[in-house]
Image 1 (cartoon, rainbow, N blue to C red):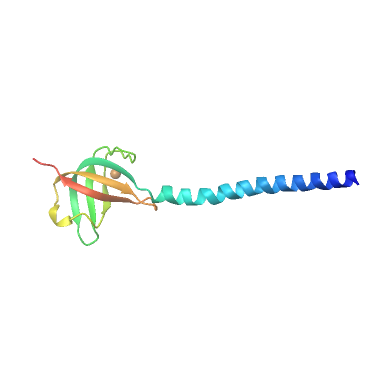
Image 2: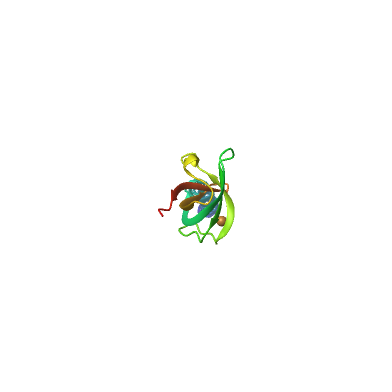
Length: 121
Ligand SMILES: [Cu+2]
């Protein structure tokens, strides 16, 4: 009687161990998903300086020639168009203006200007 029972227990223990391992990785996958979403939702930002080349109020875009952007979010100097956050008042900005700006990258990997400060002359 002992041998079959211990065999059954061994099988049960093995099954439990296997389930445990499977459960652990399933749990990790479940835990990873929300963390991944949170990481994507957290905004990565960087700061830089540049000159406004064009203001597109209709599309809410700024064409900027910018220097190196530093912070968690980095970018090499270049001229490019940025989407502009609704909090930025485009009416205060014009072509040729020197600015300091903060950009972020959203979950889709798109850059957005979050803040613009005209440089004081
Ligand atoms: Cu750029």
